[in-house]
Image 1 (cartoon, rainbow, N blue to C red):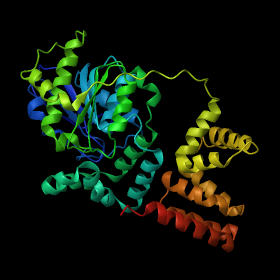
Image 2: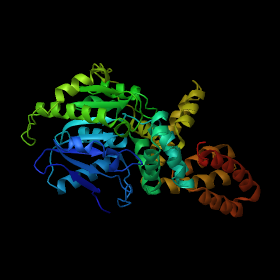
Image 3: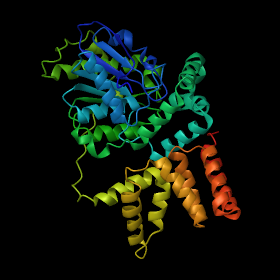
Image 4: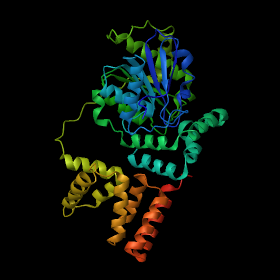
Length: 424
């Protein structure tokens, strides 16, 4: 499988490199309106996510996998140190690079990003919807997630462009990116990001809004917040001038502070001082958060089991199980988490799809329909399609009995209807 990404360069060959990353469902063209300005000062490197913009459809399993592919691409081009700006999942890639490869990143801008994107349940259900219905539901709802209503109404051509970007994305790569975002959580690691960081967010972003931005700024020691009025999630598209000026000011200033000989020191960009003054109302300094006191490390099996249980069954299911436990049942909940999820479900011998097949069959065979709803939902999140679940239950009808299979069909059918129905 190729370990590199589709890319393009803009700007002088002898200028320092600024890497720019896209958001989920978009291509490098989401940054088109920044290129004329940024490419005057940097050699701008843009890349596409796998299966986006015609890029080869080799899905990446995690944000770290995407970051590794990006580094492999840059290594092949001889780029060792660079500035990085990324939007949404592109921002997650930049944060991962700053944490795992801090010597490579000179300065960082996180646009419409977050240390954790919503809940794992939200992104896994998005994957279930795409696996069942294709990308049309995501394409249809993209404008309301990405743009303010006024912009969407005034710019129908840009809205249609955005919808087409999603429609032409490879579904498998989109689902894999959803899984990567579901697993991404760097809330406990923000204090280790040691590069100058700009956190830029649209004031009306309903996906990763100002609250998430302030969490980033509070946790990253050398970070400042830029709040852009009149912009939603794709602020670079909706407010291109403001975003370009803020990025120009940040990277010019931050790289002047970089003492590494690997990157030339840039002179103050023409007009940068005026830019900073004109955007003072939308860029504010937030203090670093005081770190919490260290807590004792949990038992590895319990910690691993909690993570796997949440990934498979969903946060809402696990939260409800914990909320319903009391002094009498809490030890049982710990046993389930540590043994079933931390040991058996965490073993490498079978993938999760196969474990879901076995679990659904076992629940039907043992006459325990009360567990079927949770595990039918888990099976969808683990990659089984409704058609495959139907075949599993038909097989149980032969070997476990028609009444048991009939009850299972009733439970699983309701779950499939709930999980695969696109949002209105």
